[in-house]
Image (tube, rainbow, N blue to C red):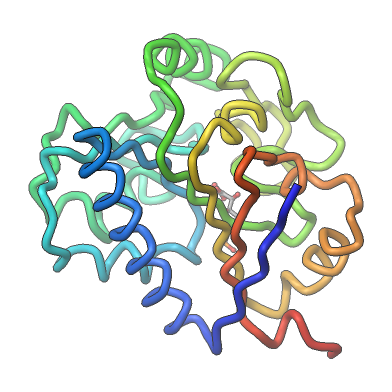
Length: 227
Ligand code: 6PG
């Protein structure tokens, strides 16, 4: 499977490039199929791209937003990935509220995962999946040494995540791979070791995302050079 490493100078260029790619994917999907199914990444890295999308010119009514993972904290908690995406972007544009499919992680990991798996049953392949990379090679809430659901249920309960909070809901690697395009966003020196291991083809959660078209990794160029 192809991993295409796309170097950008810094976080600013990463946000700019990512927002342009998200918009381009949406234009293509809307022209081809009339709708755009996008899965958002959690964490800090994508927030700059999300903010830029506030001013995008697009038919927001065609957008359908899903999440790759969610943290099991109360519904409006500032640590929720969905809340951060809403604050940065979604609450500032005209995406119909019923098109934003937050993971009900406030129900707890097990019930939240079951509810989201049920919702995804009627959803086809995603047009674009955005993902981050953790220091240990995790992506979404798929952690090394844990279940990644390469072929299992669409969503899984995570109860002892090494990154807080310990309880999370994540889409499985198989479901995240059912996408026309997958785009990882990676910045920060703390990611260097994970990037090196991924490039060396070690078995990491990030490497378990294997859509047929391969994945693109937008990455700060310094992380591809020797330290
Ligand atoms: C989360 C995530 C997680 C994240 C990476 C990178 O809920 O924390 O979805 O997989 O994307 O840990 O996080 P940063 O972008 O903050 O480095």
